Length: 483
Image 1 (cartoon, rainbow, N blue to C red):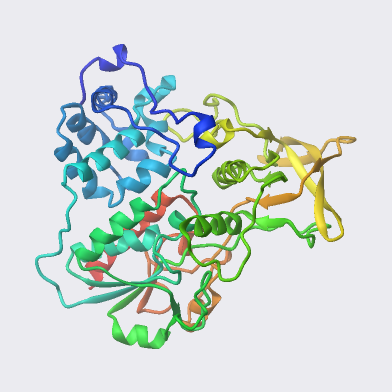
Image 2: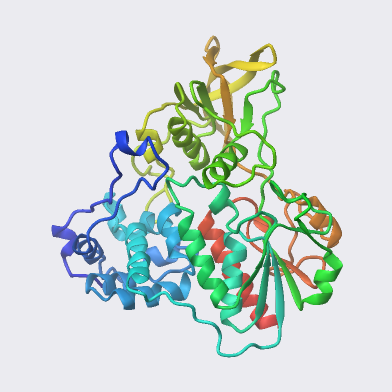
């Protein structure tokens, strides 16, 4: 695959970002694109490695070597044809996937894997440019109808594959637009929402129906869905009108931190902050909720993951006075540690485009309390901690005398998510929850209600966009077999 020996002569070349002084003043995508010739060169580095561990590591089982070879040879149509057979939305994963495949690339042994994610993005954008991506409705319908509750990545993936198989699919979305976390969580500078709209238009022309601003049963959804224009959909009516109902409602119960001073104003959940910014930028209603701005404020982000990074980039664009990000875990190594050998996914230091735009990052920091004045947060009381291994478990110990304060006018909690939050749906459909608070499934996607299935984050907890897409596809395949 690719050009034999090319990896010896051609170094990995990342797409790179627009200049900081330019991108910090707008919300346009920060990553740039290489020329077609440069992209073909990067694809040529794919080796005939015998065992494609990249394929093994990919949640959606993309056949990387095959479409890399097509790309190297300039066969954009062939590359797209192979890619879209396994991945319904390369325009999403090509921008926001953490590239599990690249960690398992044979060239990753020397920290120079093939630029698979960027190549994927280039292929789908070239396919749109060449007019290859066109609506492909099924030749005939099979008479079966499936309702999908939730228009995030898992629901959209299931809808895509079920529609191709001839099912009549209706997606019920509780918000005013489809996309879920893709639209209302990920900032525009990482994923322009026009790419979501473009894909939805194709799906609509292929026959997928979308019901927006829909409340299923007694389950409240996000902003603006409880108004007079909300469509109320009774759960029993839904069960009676469809052969099967698939729940892809996500897991959006954010982790909180219950310490002294939590009641002070100015302490905001990260997803609420990011969602309000995305809605404001799109000119959408925020349901009467005032957008949160970081302008002129000292911003503290608690949580060192991708969501925390998105908060850093957003706060800088809003004109924050200073941005600090803290993480309770220790600082990861720069390179793959011995205990996580190739081809496993290594926990290494990730520096995003947002971090490069300006922020202070601190590790092994525990938040002890919030300090407020007149009901508003003004600082955080924290301390340094040490991590030790005992009996196979990591233990956290406070470093004596290490207490300190971080001034903050806005604190963003980016500590991840725990379980599903649409308790009304769970109750109305008569579903069981597991010990983590997610919808319990038996077998594969079956819930305690024989006519209701679940897929994506709602059944296994908050995870990656690419895993949600993979689970949506697997659920669709299981529904095809069942019906």
